[in-house]
Amino acid sequence: MDFFEEILNSARKGKFVTSYCQQCNKYIWPPKDSCNLCYSTAVIKDVPSNGVLLSKSISYISGKEGYFGLGEFTGIRIIGTIERSMKIGDRIVICRIREKNRKIDLKFCVDM
Ligand SMILES: [Zn+2]
Image 1 (cartoon, rainbow, N blue to C red):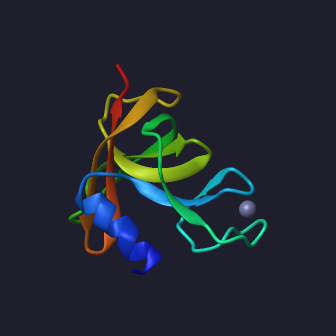
Image 2 (spheres, rainbow, N blue to C red):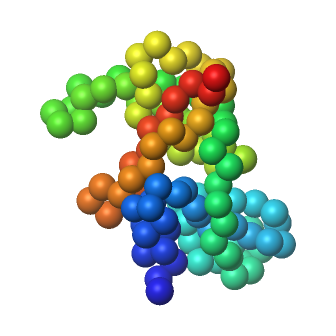
């Protein structure tokens, strides 16, 4: 199975995984089958769901209205939907993951 397919399949099951380089001990996002630093073959690994909200913005694009945030999780930065009340610097968790039009769709919630 293709690397990206495996990541999408996990998302369908509600689990967020991405590529990981065992040489550099780094997660790779967007996922790739090899490390962009040392070119080793990457493996698939679960991403810890605890992170920090780095920035937030609002979208007025039709069909995509809402608040979006950039979260950092174990060194990787990903965009997800957020609640209006969330603030930059908040501790967050990935509270929902799904596959939408062959893309990973994440929702972040405040980590209680
Ligand atoms: Zn590497």
